[in-house]
Image (cartoon, rainbow, N blue to C red; front, side):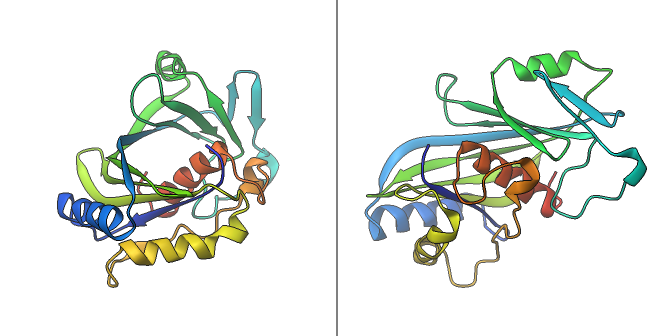
Length: 224
């Protein structure tokens, strides 16, 4: 994926009815093409240790200056596994650990983590299921969000393809959002994402940035 991405949460969405409303406005109002089904899974793991060592990447917390993490960040004992896309051949896998490392990884990573029971314990999981739509220069993905067995609203992911600088594209993506959402929708805009915490360039987005946005949204909103 290229371009710039914005991940939002429609908090008071009404399940299938809201998903259908977005589909109608995208297909009829914006003349989008339905690309097919889309899904994403996120799993939260917790460790009793204050470090992580993943594929040669190690991050240790400073025990002399330990402070509680600000809202919207993961703790040094947390690790998130993010799997995006539909179908085994098209899925992307990302790991974010210790609040400062985000890497793309292989599908086998989940089974490896699950075998390390003394290091990582599964805590919570979230699943998004919906559809992907394509316009002339954008892709919009929408899906119902389930955390465990609880419905938690709807996720909207807007991908503006011509430009990868988020500062230059937010206005255009906001215009798209206004066209498809009801005016009274309660939306968490997922503001305050600091990519530099994960050593990511804040001016040029990649798939790593998108995965980081999801983790930020889930932690900021206390979903996971």
